[in-house]
Amino acid sequence: MCATPMLMGQWPAAALMYRLGYIEQAEPVVYEQRSLDDLWHRRMPIIAEDAGYDPNRDKDNMSKESNVKDGVNPLAYFVGPVVVKYGGDPSKSRAVDLSPYLQEDKKLIRSITGQLTMDYGRGLCMLNAPKAQGVTGFLKKGRTFKCADVEIQSGNDYATVLVVAMDDKPLKSSGKILVQVGTTERPLGWKTRPAQVNGRAGEEVMSFGRAPWMIVNGDVTLALKNMKITKARVLDANGMPVKEVPLATSAGRKTLKFPADALYVVLE
Image (cartoon, rainbow, N blue to C red):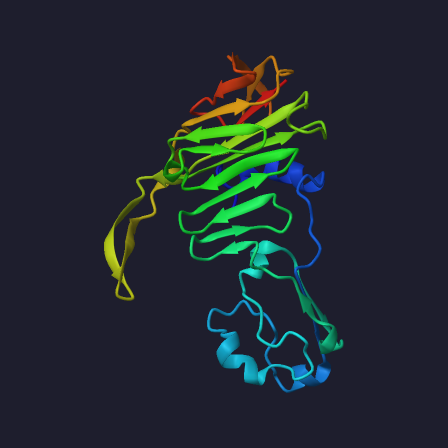
């Protein structure tokens, strides 16, 4: 089910930056060629999504012709594209050195483009591209997030904040910018209680609740390095202007206290 305010309502900024190519697409970090003989004999690939896959244990069942002998860390999927060619030559498989991008001791992953950073220890992911910046996850654990042109502060336990240029220009010089904030939602009357799930602490749903959706108010403040911006307009869920909200200027930056009950604000 995706037709909810905090799922469908988060599509505009995501679709905009995707369709305009704001996030750099990297060259493959893993390129594997698998022979048909290896497939028919069910030999292991050099990388797998299966949580039970262990290159050290399973390498004896890997292709003897492959030039990647010890397998590839599955976290490579977060570093960049992983591509496979079926019916190819295993000796032409290749993988980049992932060590500059993985800090497993700190539970940090950086994409090969440098535009995405995931802190899977704290449940945070940051986007930092010239025309699109933002953060998603348990924001209260970080409180302040500094991108190249945007600083984001949030008191929300969980939220997503995206700042995306609408005119295909870098955020620092854009004349029209969409700011989008999403939090968490539950139906009215949603009720759970603590429970054991497979021997671990979890939650049992006692009531699914009913309409309307109860949405957590946003607690987000933005500081943007763009002095061209002079006004901020709140849009409703249909993208229609509702009202203007104040912008402050401080230390060469425009500051916006995002309205607690809004989905979208356009800066111009």
